[in-house]
Length: 90
Image 1 (tube, rainbow, N blue to C red):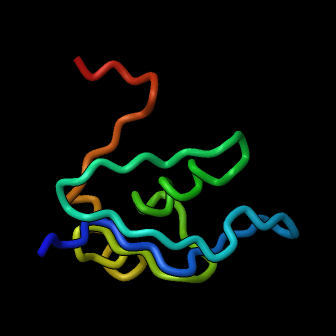
Image 2 (cartoon, rainbow, N blue to C red; image 1 turned 45 degrees about the horizontal axis):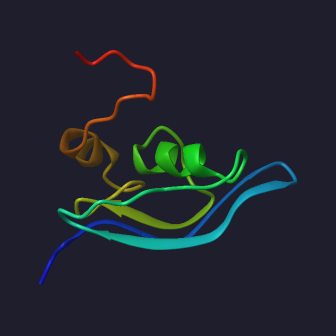
């Protein structure tokens, strides 16, 4: 049985009256390929920022590599790497 690398349940985020995420749920199995797709303003960057501990969700839960992003952000950061779309990593 494959372990879960990322688990998102009921994720919500708002900026004042603008609801950016409203009950987002998904699961990514370890070793799988996952694409987070959507139109501009759909909340993709917000989800990535929450999963990488750069932003706090209003409600819901998110775990990365078994670590809750709200309760153990330092463990999440130690277990991942992140590069932006236009970063030169070579």
